[in-house]
Length: 84
Image (cartoon, rainbow, N blue to C red; front, top):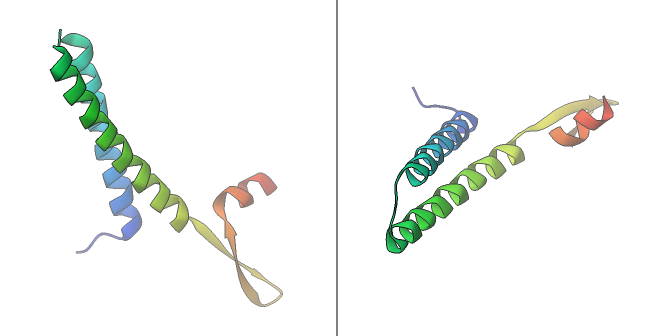
Protein backbone atom coordinates (compact mmCIF):
# COMPACT_ATOMS: atom_id res chain seq x y z
CA UNK A 1 0.00 0.00 0.00
CA UNK A 2 1.30 3.43 -0.94
CA UNK A 3 2.05 5.84 1.92
CA UNK A 4 0.34 9.24 1.95
CA UNK A 5 2.58 12.14 0.97
CA UNK A 6 2.55 13.56 4.50
CA UNK A 7 3.80 10.23 5.89
CA UNK A 8 6.63 10.23 3.33
CA UNK A 9 7.62 13.74 4.47
CA UNK A 10 7.57 12.61 8.09
CA UNK A 11 9.64 9.52 7.32
CA UNK A 12 12.16 11.55 5.32
CA UNK A 13 12.44 14.16 8.06
CA UNK A 14 12.82 11.54 10.80
CA UNK A 15 15.44 9.66 8.78
CA UNK A 16 17.35 12.88 8.12
CA UNK A 17 17.36 13.83 11.80
CA UNK A 18 18.58 10.34 12.75
CA UNK A 19 21.37 10.56 10.14
CA UNK A 20 22.42 13.95 11.49
CA UNK A 21 22.52 12.62 15.04
CA UNK A 22 24.76 9.72 13.98
CA UNK A 23 27.02 12.06 11.99
CA UNK A 24 27.35 14.54 14.87
CA UNK A 25 28.06 11.77 17.36
CA UNK A 26 30.79 10.32 15.14
CA UNK A 27 32.33 13.77 14.63
CA UNK A 28 32.38 14.38 18.38
CA UNK A 29 33.96 11.02 19.17
CA UNK A 30 36.57 10.87 16.42
CA UNK A 31 39.68 12.92 15.87
CA UNK A 32 39.07 13.72 12.22
CA UNK A 33 41.50 15.27 9.79
CA UNK A 34 40.63 18.59 8.23
CA UNK A 35 39.64 16.87 4.99
CA UNK A 36 37.44 14.32 6.78
CA UNK A 37 35.86 17.09 8.87
CA UNK A 38 35.02 19.09 5.75
CA UNK A 39 33.52 16.02 4.10
CA UNK A 40 31.42 15.33 7.21
CA UNK A 41 30.34 18.99 7.27
CA UNK A 42 29.28 18.82 3.59
CA UNK A 43 27.34 15.63 4.29
CA UNK A 44 25.65 17.30 7.25
CA UNK A 45 24.66 20.29 5.13
CA UNK A 46 23.12 18.02 2.49
CA UNK A 47 21.16 16.11 5.12
CA UNK A 48 20.01 19.37 6.73
CA UNK A 49 18.81 20.73 3.40
CA UNK A 50 16.91 17.49 2.74
CA UNK A 51 15.28 17.70 6.18
CA UNK A 52 14.39 21.38 5.70
CA UNK A 53 12.81 20.60 2.33
CA UNK A 54 10.74 17.76 3.81
CA UNK A 55 9.67 20.00 6.69
CA UNK A 56 8.75 22.84 4.34
CA UNK A 57 6.70 20.52 2.13
CA UNK A 58 4.91 19.11 5.17
CA UNK A 59 4.15 22.63 6.47
CA UNK A 60 2.68 23.58 3.11
CA UNK A 61 0.43 20.51 3.22
CA UNK A 62 -0.71 21.19 6.77
CA UNK A 63 -3.53 23.54 5.95
CA UNK A 64 -6.86 23.23 7.61
CA UNK A 65 -10.03 23.38 5.60
CA UNK A 66 -12.63 25.35 7.43
CA UNK A 67 -16.18 25.97 6.43
CA UNK A 68 -17.41 29.51 6.84
CA UNK A 69 -20.86 30.59 5.68
CA UNK A 70 -21.12 27.57 3.40
CA UNK A 71 -17.84 28.38 1.67
CA UNK A 72 -14.68 26.40 2.12
CA UNK A 73 -11.68 28.55 2.89
CA UNK A 74 -8.09 27.54 3.53
CA UNK A 75 -6.41 28.53 6.75
CA UNK A 76 -2.75 27.95 7.43
CA UNK A 77 -2.13 25.65 10.38
CA UNK A 78 0.06 28.25 12.13
CA UNK A 79 -2.68 30.88 11.86
CA UNK A 80 -5.32 28.59 13.34
CA UNK A 81 -3.08 27.81 16.34
CA UNK A 82 -2.58 31.49 17.16
CA UNK A 83 -6.33 32.07 17.11
CA UNK A 84 -6.96 29.50 19.86
